[in-house]
Image (cartoon, rainbow, N blue to C red):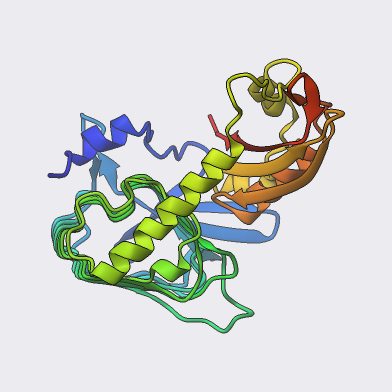
Length: 360
């Protein structure tokens, strides 16, 4: 059973959208945040108001078509995103058409829209925020538009995007420019979900990603590179062949973990100080990714040589290509470690370090 939207949002630390620095305007029945930077004018669809308890309240209903551009006071603004909580708690909203060129769907943008039945995601969308379609119990179809390879974006999904969409039956995501990461609880409690397909690679399948998807039978396990052990907890419909493939993925990860283990009588490598404090001091958050509020964990693998130097640095997985590149850069710049020892002698050691990108 889904948590009430307010409780879920509070648990995840999702603060209300602030509009103090932007002009807010009602245009043709929708509310927008209007922004101007130099000659660039953009608009974000936003909520109508909040009640005394801080809950999003809007009168959006029926079939809503969001335009590509809006005009206000003689100026034209490009609709760039759907903001945090923009349509949240609109039970009479039945469908939404997003414009070509929209880039982001904010946290809980359609949360608790219990009458929403279908939505089309343009190929221009590069980020869908946490709980964007949380508890949309009537949602049956989510279509991700195809695009030619030159136009495809890297798609970043937040946690619990489709959590509790009990009527959702099929999801197909076309190939993207970077491997797809499915974060924690992204399709949890979608009990009618029968098939999840993507033409791309799934680099990271988070904890409980498909938890209690009791009807799920169609997953291409050959496309999964890494997955949390509990990613499919509560899924009971897999064939013997798919179960064997899933177990093979888990065994492969177990073998990798055991290969990294250090015997009790040996000493693992050590960073000279607090490694996470050092990372926090030296990480340079990519500006565009910071503006999109993309955050999360990047796993970086490297070799600590017998002299303590860092070599063979490789970004394994993460929420965004630029974050992976920054994590690799900062790890390469680390000072020498105290090397691992075996029988009292320095030896090479493979190490996987989580680099955390977190915004205030």
